[in-house]
Amino acid sequence: MECVSLDIVKCSKVIEELKVELLRAQYLVQQGTLNASQEHLLESMAGLVGLSYLLTRRLGYDFSRLDRVLYNQMAQWQKDDFLNLETEWGDLSLLLNYLVPEED
Image (cartoon, rainbow, N blue to C red; front, side):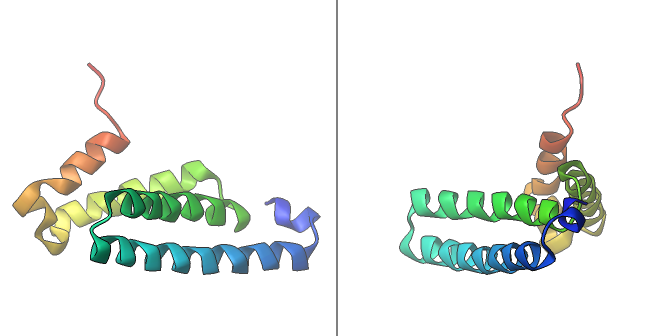
């Protein structure tokens, strides 16, 4: 965890800034859906993902740990059929296969 060797105030400040940017990106996703703007929506979604990784790092975790937790959470959602996403569209299977593709 690199924050320990850095200025604690500086590290805390960037963490708070990243959390604000996550909220801003979430707002922009909402705006993108309301305006039916594919470009803005995808940029906002990419921002959410990227900011999540950066915040994970600033909180002292490896990117790969977030990946593992994400995979496990999606597997649980698949099992629970979260929001009927699996039975209706198979979204969770698609995402899990994307995250960890099967080898040929």
